[in-house]
Length: 322
View 1 (tube, one colour):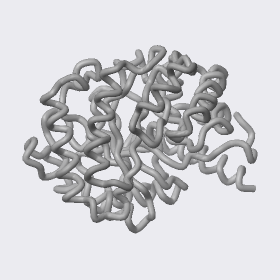
View 2: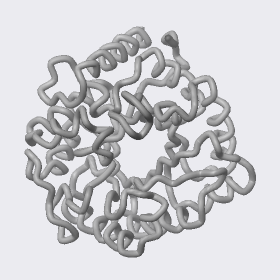
View 3: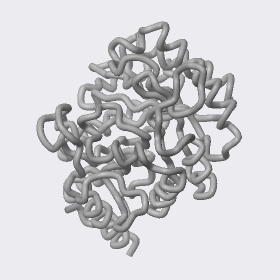
């Protein structure tokens, strides 16, 4: 396990969701979340804030042609809470947590197709206006997130840049001061040269949170420093978007992408944090919900072992604080 020290950043943010979009992966927490009351959603936000996280990224406001809020785009998904978005934003207001609101999922759950689908893009653009009008008064409505992941191999595809910039143009019209985030994958494949820096300049985003790809077994904590060193240099040259890490704190119960997500051992997570801490501006994780639960939580969502990851992390954090 990485020893605590001043050069290791704590976890200060996480992705967040009402339902995980890949059902087999969310098997341990989707059923519980579907039944959460408004009070439980609010309790979960407070639990996360009490663990030291100040930023949450809501992955999706719709899924499988159903929405999590009242909208003319889709019928609403039946949940234990009539308006989970209002519940979590109200709690975040009280807890001083910042939410980035995601524009997903308004098309097929296939980033290779949905980003180029005009109908899906029209729905996404419409959702921004409705979300800003309905929830924009919340202080915790901090920014936006474009969740149909951009693949880098070794550069962004032109259609990815077009998709991002069209959404960002509308978001900046609606909420001029709200920062915009993306979280691409293919981190190990990035070629951080002049061409990549030029793409960073072209992307209308304020934050790029690169997936470390350890949970999906494409990288190891020993390899990630080299990837983020190159990215740090590219972002320093561009001086446009902040560089964050998206640290994957999960493992797969069985085959990758074909089995349930389960909490990783903290020994691995600690090495992941240590590997990127000096190279990024902030450490986010995918994802607290489902992977971590405070023992005795009134809003428990995940497998029983999730309390161990929570406890091990909090013990490590307390040791780090001295």
